[in-house]
Length: 473
Image (cartoon, rainbow, N blue to C red; front, side, top):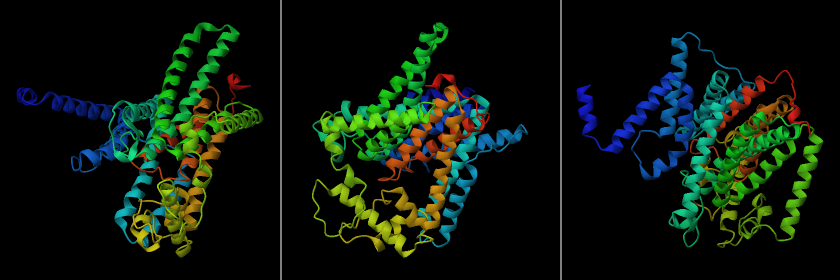
């Protein structure tokens, strides 16, 4: 003890605080793996930042260290207590089918260095989902929501600081003097926006839920819980504003389109009667079109989305003149063509999971020698790497997720239903944004695994089909 005190006394204050924090995390995770999961979600998005500003500091990034330690503490702790049980999930089989096929494609992949980490990434999605299920069953869904929102809020605050308060940043992200695109610790605006945008519809759904609950208390004069609902509504409203601000300041067109689709999904599925939701969604869409036609949308948004139609257009860009205005768009479409060339060459089996980048040189267009790491369209990327079989299994997985979420919305009530509606928005967001990107980067997959676990828990406990009168519009 004396020696330990002397060592601490001779160290800088920051080192002592870091050691104390690490010790607290280690002890907390050993006592309750759920704490480790929350820390994992928070630490995960710092991988790109560490690779940029502290390369070599750790053998692997902090998020991967934490998830390995947390999973180990979870399994070993359960075995020591003789009560470890692998949780069940309706999504386990479609996940295993896709991951299994992705692993099989490693047999003909030319570069395992690229493929194996991606297979491990999808295995981590499964394991995080199972851990989240166990934590939510023991501690409640609020534990997962705490980790999800704490992580997203931190990233949004960092992005807001980078975009408007710091006054300096990468030249490639500069919009005007002292104004930059937000990128958080992702070191790129698009994946940062994808991470924040995935959580935004959940915050919107919970805000709306507590608004309705508060209004119900006022109407029925049951005001004993009104303060509680008002506090929760304010809290989630602040979260929503922060996440929306971070997403807006990213100036990511894919994220903006994804957010619009996600908000539309929340509007459609929030009412108990689907036809009412569809009517509200149609009204919202007509209103958005009217605002755009009247030129009432903010100029930054209207100008940024002026070519949104061509953003999703697949075309042959060989020989297309390139300029500053269309460079990013043509570059993305050139990478789509490279993916289609791979798919044409190996239509059923693909070229090997996560081997788009090492094989890009063989399939690229003449004017685009630099690979971007992926095809900037997850569906084309999966098809190129795992073939029609892999794409079919990937779509089967996401169809299973959407179907399970829809059934949960129809059966759940109260807070569970609000979370399920928000999750539907999250899936719609991912599906839309990944038409122009690949968001399985910088440990975002850990967050996706946690959200899948959240969905699995809510779905499992809403099998009775009970309905909530608070959403009977």
